[in-house]
Image (cartoon, rainbow, N blue to C red):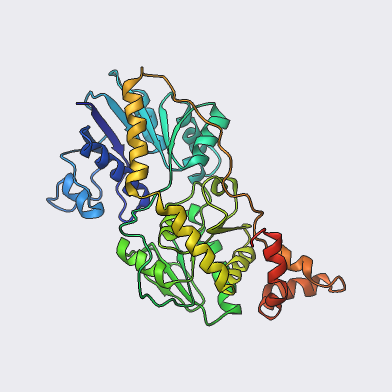
Length: 401
């Protein structure tokens, strides 16, 4: 039996990244890989709680072998790094093994430009075999460091994330708001939602995903950390899902889509490789542009219905087992081939091909005799009064039928 070890960073309650690591580790374990989890430390353990019980309490996965600390990794056939500073530890192991790197984000972006940023980027140059979530990371690692990777699709547990019958829709937006994670754009999102609430005060705003408080000056409901079933119920009663991913996409928008929820996301290279035209609108990074996209969807029931069907269809063939089977196949390939041999990398193109939604569209459509001051005033404060006049043109510009 092949023995596999995973170096897992400090456990964080509610972390989607930890959930993805542990899901895949447990899937390998259930497919007859002798799996050992090495937790970075014991900071999440309660008094007299075992490491295995802690993982089960926080994430619901059970492992027979769980150890604390990365200072003494036992010889095994394969070792996974799962965060940038674990990659060097895997690189320097003093026993022969296959060395893999489970990559979920461009983690250099979590740090200011400097030593830590560069060291995080260097983790892709250590000779480990990356398995990335989504296509953008595979593209980025190859284009920057000429390193070939495996990749697996963004997936969702479709037994949980699915359309529910007889759920009444609210005129509401749900926003994954995690101010402790700068890459999630909480402040940009709140600014955008403030504009929406000013122009459409009847819209209900739900924030969720964190226990960290932040200043919000408009009426809203903060749900904090909620479980997966509660997330799905939220997605089913809202009209629009809002998520900002400034590094690799989160799994959140894909879970929203599995529930049939149209999404608003950030338009950048990192999101364009994995999000589809038919179920998402990607917006320029200005708060006004996010607000534009949100209002645009809230005002267009037919488009929301079309996007909802497309979202559910896009995720229908990407259940939980689909992504994990892709990881399993990658592990089998590594297991069957000599150490140091990289997989072939196929050319990858962006999936999203539309231009970004931008508030600038509305400025351009105003009469030429408007002064710059009036254009700015109308764009920011009176869009509601002339939105109906330009929706058809904007829709046409974006190529949405």
